Amino acid sequence: MPHPLIPAAALAVFALALPAAADTLVTRTVEGSFDEIAFAVENAILEKGLVIDSVSHVGDMLERTKADVGATATIFTKADVFQFCSATVSRKVMEADPMNIAFCPYGIYVYELPETPGQIGVAHREYPEGPMQEVQALLADIVETALK
Image (cartoon, rainbow, N blue to C red; front, side):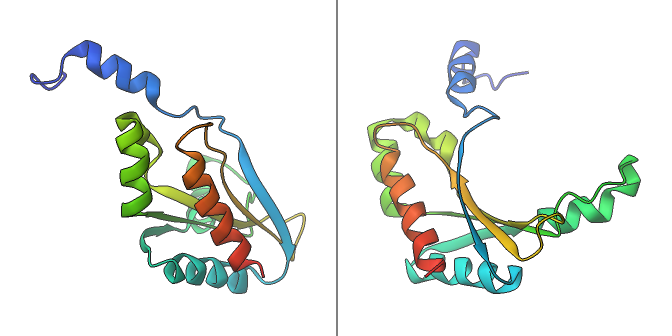
């Protein structure tokens, strides 16, 4: 049951504003060690003065639970998602459109596929035109810094 103070129509509008599941990713692939590249991404985020809210070890979780769900395939050798926000950038994009809340927190994905060992993918979502391009520029800068 919806919260009594939030009309159902408002919930429907908010649901429509949520990002699509098939968002486009901006991906860079580099040769190296997963642990070194993940560490470089973490440091690049911290060097921007940002606080990492969480690091999701998606690859470990998928591997640990594959038998539990009847799967046999290993999807990632390793895969982590770094989630964080920027108070300055988030405020700016949400002042422009409060529904930009749907994009927060921001994430950078670091992964290695079993079929391409030593090829590390570093990705982030591609954001819509307009105010969210500032977030995209921030993420691109973090990735560029990490991969120097």
